[in-house]
Length: 91
Image (cartoon, rainbow, N blue to C red; front, side):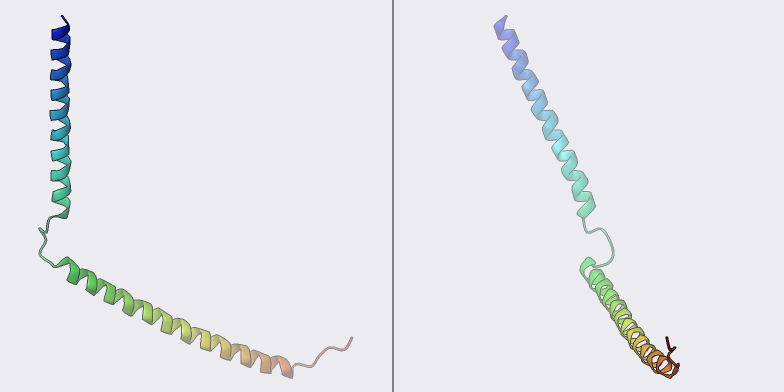
């Protein structure tokens, strides 16, 4: 009787190991499908082009922001000149 129990446990261990190995192969196959180079463009070149485009856009935003800051500064100066021409109220 004990031999049957031991044989059953050993068989279940083998089945479990085979099941786990099969699942591992399935996951590896799915991962491989996600990273295979099956597209027509070079991903590195595409990424470099996108980075360059982003850099150009960011530099444009920086220049625009600098322009706006300069305009705001000039407007504040003009406002100061206008405020200086307004007579002060006497208490």
